[in-house]
Image 1 (cartoon, rainbow, N blue to C red):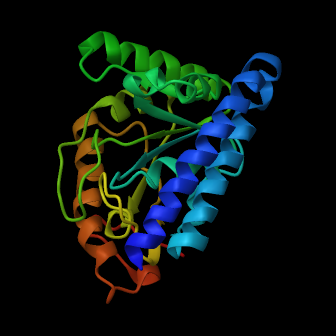
Image 2 (cartoon, rainbow, N blue to C red; image 1 turned 180 degrees about the horizontal axis):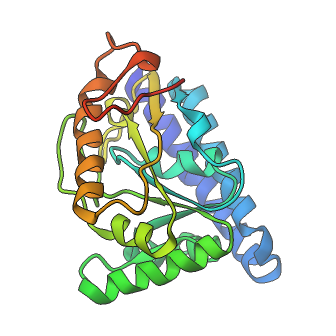
Image 3 (cartoon, rainbow, N blue to C red; image 1 turned 135 degrees about the horizontal axis):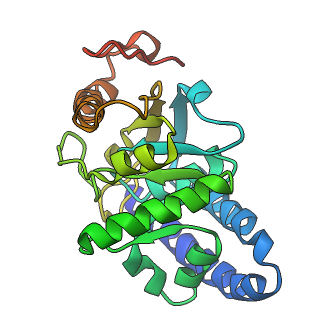
Length: 253
């Protein structure tokens, strides 16, 4: 049954995405101010399809740490393609930091740029970091909420990766605190996995980390939250509202 549900969802995903991307090309030229709202509608359709077809539900804890309006920096764990959809529905004006290769996808790529996403060249070195900071400043000036996956790539649940330094540079340049986010999305929608398993994906939004922390301390705290949080979120025996980490951060539902 899981295989059949996944096949139906994948068909739904690609067909709807293709037709909406085709219509989006017209929208991009004639109504560019509506592209972001259109992209948010598409993401909502995909998540609703995943819920109805695959039985994938969502719980968000610590929602009060997310902005209702205005700019923000969101640093999220990355385990699944689900993570690249969900923030379109949780934030008012999201802007993802994404790999530049995605902008080369026919039809879909130009829509990402039109929606104000932030492409980066992973192998670009210092020049890429400067471009990231510049585009982040622009997004923040427009009141956007910038989402970055500091691990740089999707990791399986329990897998640890070295955090990339871009998030620290973004915080220093904008003065915005970093909102850390934990997830267990990979348990149900795996890395490059065809099958999507029925269950409830949980997202835990933690209290912000101050932007004026020394760079090493900032990255160390974020890494500690990611590493401790992976096990804590996956462990069903933990009562999330009472969860405390060794650095004193508390998860609130």
